[in-house]
Length: 360
Ligand SMILES: Nc1ncnc2c1ncn2[C@@H]1O[C@H](COP(=O)(O)OP(=O)(O)OP(=O)(O)O)[C@@H](O)[C@H]1O
Image (cartoon, rainbow, N blue to C red; front, side, top):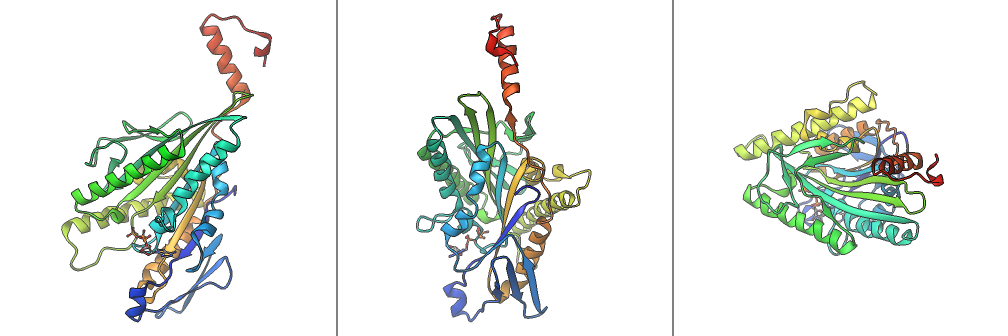
């Protein structure tokens, strides 16, 4: 996967309400890489992606094509899967799903602990997580147990370029139950917050990151990886008429953040010297997930019906641009030598004598 961001497209099925209303399907897929939109006003638009999932694709199939990224996070990469698309196009269904049809998140959580179990003789893994919401340019720490968005949170980077939010809660998740519980806790405080702010949760961006610290028991090498799942706010434009002041503020902030994301993507795809990560909190939060040391997978979710055609074509055009990004992913590893040197320094500082095995 080295070299570029992967982009998968997924069309949701036409809903029963849409069928009753006489809406019709305009999305076709001639093969697993192509999606065609039969617009009613601008002819046929064709797009190519790394994978195209259609209305009949199952949650399991979608996960199967993403699960290879789990191992990458264990190997010390920053992995990020994000969903882009208009409201109601299936982003949450893909990323989270529901009890009957679990999406990527719950399947990935189990997958992570399966990998830990399979490798427990050789590796010791520490799992922790954080969960953030970005609403109208304000960060809300969903694991902090407060229901108000905080402007005070500062986005920082550690020495290895890993993003963290100063003052935010990073919760340990030693087993699958605690990881699921952390996610559920965050999701429910998102609901409380969105009711308080009188907003729909789909008007905010959701970021859930799992931090993995994998220690090789024999060599002492430590790989630090990150597995982030991002459900972006709906990409549609605000209704030109009838929007309240708050709705316009939301739409404005979403447009700004998504266009900042587009600019970052453009800068990366043209290998520009300067990448404007700091233009928006969304791109600052996603900085370690795009370009550089990242393995990124974008889902562009689309609605299959004619009345959404303009949004669908806009989303697909945006996604086609993402495909151009080239990453040069490298591990966040402390290699064996560095680990040994650190141990030697620790011993020297503690006044201990060096042993023969301390030789590099
Ligand atoms: N592939 C699919 N198969 C079956 N139902 C789907 C699929 N994708 C989406 N749906 C259904 O369509 C509806 C809208 O999907 P969803 O809520 O995931 O959209 P969304 O893009 O996350 O919207 P929002 O931005 O408002 O959160 C939901 O009822 C969901 O269950």
